[in-house]
Image (cartoon, rainbow, N blue to C red):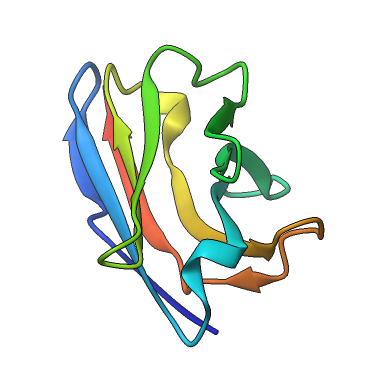
Length: 117
């Protein structure tokens, strides 16, 4: 399984940014996909995920209402649209995959998101 994240960058607080993650080496429909992030000096934390078997998506409280996760099964890709960005959203963002019914165990290389004040 390979996950390639892209789309990070520098944005001002209040702005928007979209991340993409291309997945390969897996039967995409058999996997739940998610996004995590790790800020300097902090543990990696869950941001957003989807169990598309039943159409459900879920978010960390800190991003609810601002971030949207989506996926394109035809392109085997997952996306994270981030709006109303805050300085505290600054982190390396990782996409992750979990074979349905298991924990996230496949990780992309990470993409840096920096939000300036």
